[in-house]
Image 1 (tube, rainbow, N blue to C red):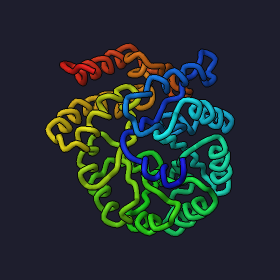
Image 2: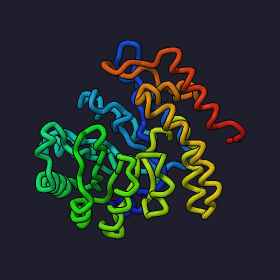
Image 3: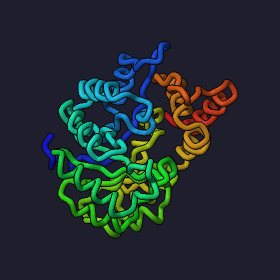
Length: 304
C-alpha cells in the first residue's frame, strides 16, 4: 500500500498478536501462521506484530524480523500490519525499523524509551520521535503505555509531534479517558489515535479516536469488531452492550493475568497461545478456570 492508503486504513480493531512458542521455547512459526489465518475475514483493521502482548521485550532481533516475514505472507491489504520496533536507543530503533520495513511492515509502533525514565522529558522524546520519523518511509505511531514504562508523554508534546508529516498517530494504553480527550483536542485532525483499553474504547471512539489495539481481540475478535462496527453504524445500544460483554475479558483475564491470561484464553477459544516466555509463567489450574468463566460470561447468549 502507498503511504496515503496506509494512513487511510489506520482505523478499526487491531489485535496485538501473541507469539506462540514450542516446547523447546522457540517461536512456533506454524502456530503463529495459523492464528493469523483464523483472523482473516473477521473485519479487523489489521494486526500488531511484536507489541507488548507479543512479548517483544523477550524476543531476539532475529525472531522479531522472522515474525514480520511470516505475518506479511498472511496479512493482505487493506489490513494494515503495524510492527513494534521501539528499543532504548534512537539509533538502534531506527536500524530495526528499517529492517522491518524491508520485510513488509506498513507502519511502526514505537514505545517511549524508558530505562533512563527521569531524563525522558518533552525535549528528549520529541527529538527521538522526530529523528525516527525523518529516517523512515512508513508512518510512525507513538506508543504510550506508562503503566509499563513509567514514562508519560504529555498531550502538548504529542500535539506538536502530530504536525510532523510522518508521525501518523498514537497508541494510548493508559486507560485514561480524560488524557485521550486532551490529546484529541491538541493533535491535527488527520492524526490517528488508537486506544489500548477496552474500558474506554467506546467513549474514545465518540471523542474522535479511530480505533483500538485490544488484547481481547486476540481471542474474541468478533466481539471487538462488532463493537466497532456498531459504533460506525450509529447503533449505540448494541455497541454499549458489546462493550459490557468485553469488560470481564479485561477485568478477569488481561488485567490480572497479563500475557499469560491472554494466551490461556487463546487456547480455550481454539487458537494457539501456549506458555509465555520465561520469566513470565503460565497460569495455574485455578486461574485457567477463572479465564474459562470469563469467556463463558462474555459469550453467553451470543451467536457468531
